[in-house]
Amino acid sequence: MRITMSNDFATLFARPNQPLSQHLNNVSILATEFAMKCGMAEILLTAGFFHDLGKVSNEFQVKLQNETDERIPHSIYGAKKVYENLRIAPPIADMLANIIAMHHGRLHDYISPSGDTPLIDELENTQLLPDFPDAPEADATLLWKTFQKR
Image (cartoon, rainbow, N blue to C red):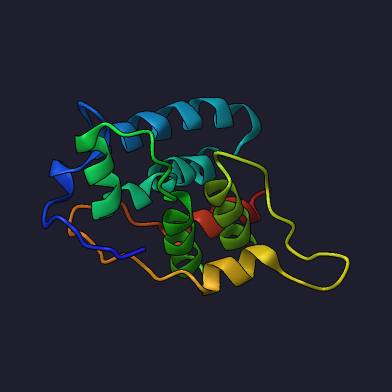
């Protein structure tokens, strides 16, 4: 997939007539409300912010403008961003990357019976999308402290 970007995160959409930033915020709030019951609010807040980050790609934005039903892979890009940002906390990085990468499907095995690591292989072979000054960032220190309290 060729990645080209708008210069302004605020001009991108998640769905027709729904700004991407609004969608990411809404999902984060909802995920946090569910997660508060099990003490995982900060972790799922982060998952909500990154789950559709791949929708910043030009291909996805063109799909929305043309109102096609074409499937554009997008979840792996947010998973990759979180995985890279949270390398200091490997259990959290792996868990969040899996949640984000598979939010439209099934979870990957971290390791298969044959020793393959499908999720890690896909993350390592996916390019990072360019950063936006106003795009969400994962706070590894906060998430690690939260995880250690469990």
